[in-house]
Length: 146
Ligand SMILES: [Zn+2]
Image 1 (tube, helix red, strand yellow):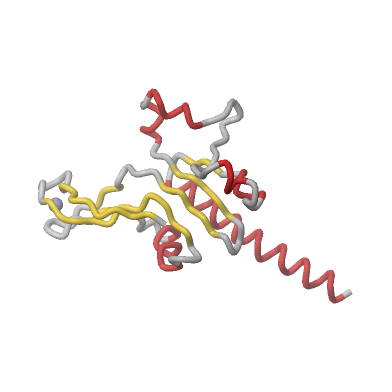
Image 2 (cartoon, rainbow, N blue to C red; image 1 turned 90 degrees about the vertical axis):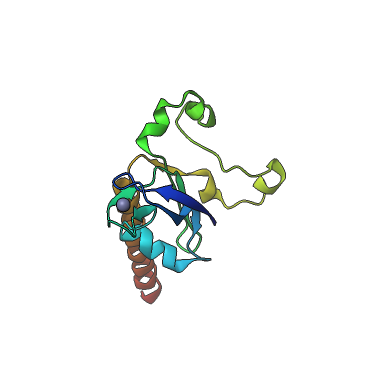
């Protein structure tokens, strides 16, 4: 997981305050961060002075190794950056920024990163995958009981 403490200026009153901006989350290392993502609180800055809330336009890599979920959120504005598209292959896939050598032992699902451009889309995708995970497990239990 990666988070950076940044000094952010409130868009409303201009007051500056420190805030932890997350760039990547591993839910096994930080289960609390998973909660914050699902509640839409991650990277949502709330000004301690005037209470104004604003979404920080930071990309976020979400990784849940237990349920084998991996998703990458980019703020839609990222598409305006000319080099943004360089990281994708022609099918719109991205690869994890890890050395070629480590890639050999990498679990297969890490090659299938789901890309989203809104936080809502990210949250819905995580909910979908978590529900799928439960359903699949129930199915396996049923099958083993037969
Ligand atoms: Zn403020």
